[in-house]
Length: 82
Image (cartoon, rainbow, N blue to C red; front, side, top):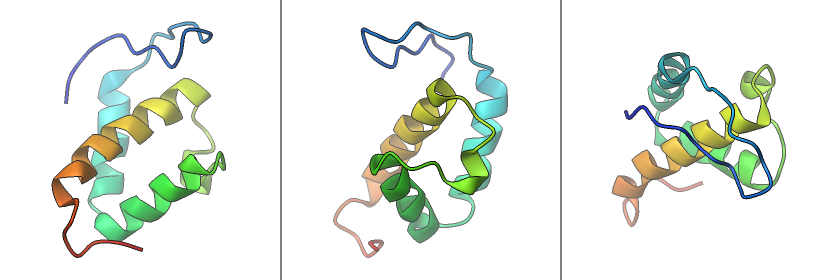
């Protein structure tokens, strides 16, 4: 994973995110498999907050979403859909 400042949008201020903590969260979610990850991504895309991410800020959830989305890009076109 990478360490960087992450801007959600032009309207959202950059938060100081704890990337090492978020990387552990991302690894834990990814370890559940691609179907579980896709379900979580789908839930976030619908602007809903999955229970397992309810303790995280919008910026943290957005970071997690984009990191998982990037990881899942390698599975695109393969058998791992909802």
